[in-house]
Length: 200
Image 1 (tube, rainbow, N blue to C red):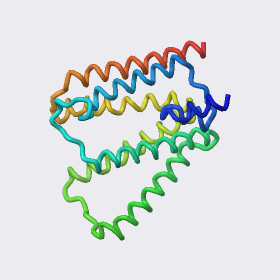
Image 2: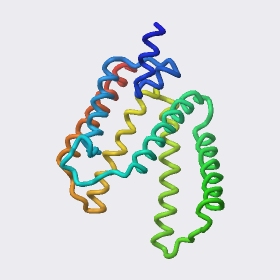
Image 3: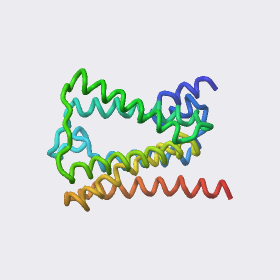
């Protein structure tokens, strides 16, 4: 039994199973792997899609990996704090963000840029408002559902991003992105339908 648990801990998708001892059924696991494969088609990393002209910066890749690692522990911690109201967790998240941002401005950046114009203020206020709402619902979602299953739904971030890129920024949608989005959506539907059947 211990060997099985250690083996599962080595897989990035099974942090929840490792630390929270939450059981991930085989269908949900396969759906998660299928969704991750769809994510690869949407992102199209240069080392797999050599024909892509964009080359990712190592700084960007490293920052993304550190961000993903940090989110893993956030998801697990939020799952542990099921008895704490989501607004309380989000409050401390934003308080920590404000303190770290202020420290960065004072010690590293050493300049504070005030937005000029209504368009910039509207974008900043809108970003803050929607970030708050998104974080609150995300926190509540991880409190209600297993961390391993709920994390699969985060793959929708990539789908929505390229949809908005196309609708608002008029960027061309690659056919591989459509394939990847369909894979992610289908995986999420399979997990959602199974959860509904289990609750009936």
